[in-house]
Length: 175
Image 1 (spheres, one colour):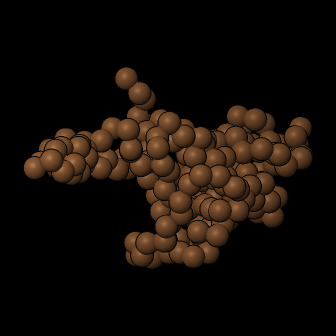
Image 2 (cartoon, one colour):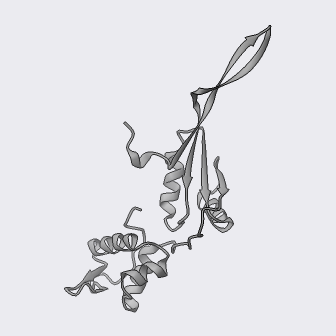
Image 3 (cartoon, one colour):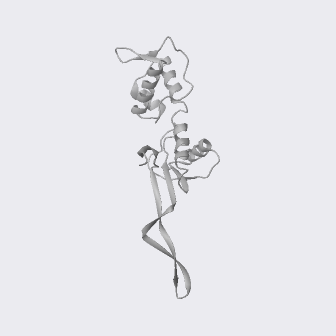
């Protein structure tokens, strides 16, 4: 069985179309009780565009389907999606799904390291500045600690690890 994380957000099936002859004439008949498994569209909803690798992964994992559609919440996000994905066989649709989310920094880890260097503002403030949720910031901070880039003291305050003063080059937390 396919792992859940490998599936798209939405799978769109169409009714099966069969051919029938009636009074000597060939007709296409739509069968609403049967599905056409050869013509399935994978739909990915992308409102936060901060994880370039995840967006590319979403395109790659859905190549097994006959079509891939990305749905986003603004024209700006649609253009950014097309820029990230490059040329290819996919569709991008813009749907009004409520409040438009701000984009997270391209390299969230480097952004967070910069905040630590300048004086850690706190988890909530960091999440607000990066336009991501607290859980995402915590996951990235935990990854930076594991890599030894930053350290955390007894009062839960972050500071640069004196051994590793350089910023990370790649994202270390998968969304």
